[in-house]
Amino acid sequence: MESLIKAHTSKKYYIICVDDHREVLDTLEAQLSSRLPKNYKYELAESGEEALEILQDLYQENEEIPVIISDQAMPGGMSGDVFLKKAHQIVPRTRKIMLTGQGEMKNIESATREAQLFRLILKPWEMEDMVLTVEQAINAYFMEAAIEEQNKTLKHLYESTELITQETDFDLLVGKLLNIMLQYSQAEKVWLINTKEEKPLLIASICASQEPQLNLNQTIIDSADYPYGALMEVLRKKEALVYEDAETQNGETYFKNQKSKSVAIVPTFQRGNMNYIFYFESKSITGLFSLSKLEIINILTSTASIALENAVLYDSMENLVIERTQEVFETNRKLTQVNAYKDQMINIVSHDIRSPLSGILNLAQLMQDKEIASNPSQVIRNCQIIQNSADTVIKFVNDILDLAKLESGTMTLNKTTIDLDSYLKNIITSFEALTLTKGVKLELQSKGELKIKADSTTLAQAFNNLIANAIKFTPKGGRVTVGLNSIEQNGKPFAQITVEDTGIGIPKEALPTIFEKLNKYQRSGTKGEKGTGFGLSIAKQVIELHNGTITVDSEENKDITQKGTTFTILLPID
Image (cartoon, rainbow, N blue to C red; front, top):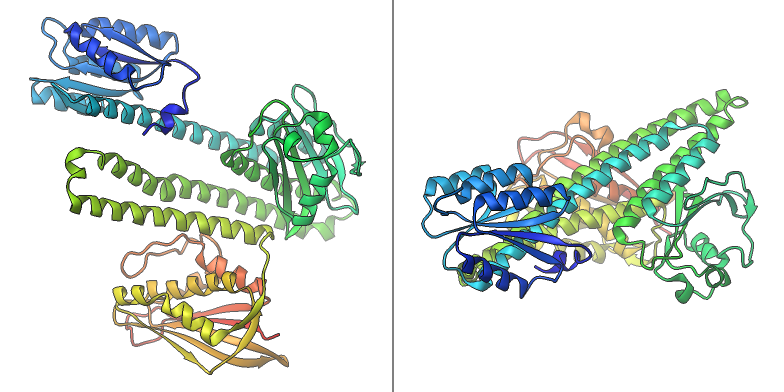
């Protein structure tokens, strides 16, 4: 419960306590100050009127007030529910806790509704319960603030990417890009390096509080003027490189001379080929490039990569109008897809990931209640819900990361010889529990031993997605059959694997886009199962990475004895 509280110790935060008995106020301050950090200050008021004046003064001074604790019954003045309603109009995000020993239920209900009461605590209270409630309220306050800040960042990020994609003049685009990168990364230096030439070229740079330097066209060489070794490592490995303290973590002369601290070197790709590197450097902050900041940088650099390519096309359009027209159209189409994909990703983060995380947080808080914690069956049930929610989040995150690797061209294969017959049997065995639960029969029809060279882990992901989909869309009493055979095509041998089900089938209009990520024809399974929307796209890209092909044949099906869906995979036999 202390994670968010400990993360906010650099400024003052106020807790307002209201009660017409001074000893109650002194007790509250003593209990809370014994557990909360020293940066929390307490304003004590013996009436609602006095508390309202304190609140207005703090609000005008832009002070943060995570929690207000107010007694309900305060004879001779403003009651607690009236005060909390007025307070809610001034600081709606502040968490409100009501103390009561005799308050009328209708007033408490009114405060709960109109002041969004966080919790009601009966007098006398247990110190541990009070402190824990206040900690939970503070965490909820910071959580909401973090979500608001995240949404604000996403909005600004969207506006920035719109600004990038609308600019077609290369030099103007580069200038805007560097300013945006400097702003969002909080670095002190940003370089743009072109990797499409025989040797990488530094084409533009910007430093904090300075205008961008454009058209530099400096060849990156092995000298003290560049972090040559680190840049070459990124070129070789085709993946980002991050140093929390480059001066001490890397032996490069450049880093030592510049006294570099945080460094991030981020490559961008088009059609699987590296085209640019963005270099970020800070001399004053260590550990600047957190995971969340790198996610924002990756969104910006990916969009920038496409926009730069688009600008290059526009610059050369005068001499290559006819030849380039189709490429410009395709680039614009991809920009539209990037924006649509980005919106869908934001929706996944805000709904499909945040919802189960909220459920986990709420249940974790609930299980700290002594009465619930002492009920084993309730604890087991809540833990099962938490596990299911966590599994959902992990599935989303794993699929997103796998898809990102596939589409960026950074996924590498470790091929070994695989006996497909034994390999598919092992995969099918892993689905026994699911098929029993669903009431679906799963079997392998194999012509015997058939060997190929493949990355067993990556290929298993494709087959797991296809088989899981087949089970998902097959009702109770249905059948899923995995077939293995060898065929010859254009004089070359192939292993043919089919995944056939007697499920509900795929609408005819959905078939052309079935392998696209997050396509609009996503559906729930026959028992309401939900997926990430990435499964078939990942399967297709994994199979194509193995120089194979995948096709689909399907008919909508209301009778489980009839035809449903068949996916056919061809993998070359080396």
